[in-house]
Length: 216
Image (cartoon, rainbow, N blue to C red; front, side, top):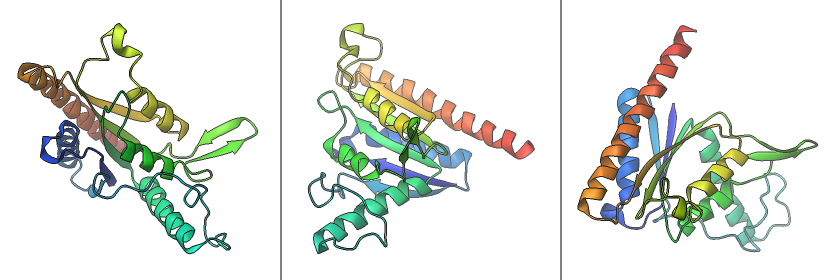
């Protein structure tokens, strides 16, 4: 089993989402010791935002006519989408920044959103091609949005990720949420405690699913 561990927060040791992904990956490995983990740190190695050289993805050998810069950008996109598609499990740290995801995470999504790789167009409309994987999003928020109707409309973080990965065909999309982390030490501790319960539940559910598959 291959697990792709993605962090996007630039806050290093002060990041809530990084602590959540660390706990998720550790719990997953404890339940699935055969899992190999690859770490992608988008705060240190983020792809550039799409521009005239990186917009439009081409598979070799259909790269004739590309400039040196375009070939380099194309290779970055190929590496990222291949890495994503090869993973059985993807753990993504996604803090809420200004009601949405960090720009470096958006840049990664733009690189893996490749026609005929993660999705394709058919006569019936778009069809996702990445439905064979589990995606676990570590969602961190300074305020409380999930249970507050007055703030729910401001959530363009989790709602966006649900849309994107749903478009890619991912049906096993899970969220581990820590919200209210900027509302004092007590609220932050409660948020981590609630997240830990979800982390253990996801790992246990996956372990049970694996055992069922082996018996089938």
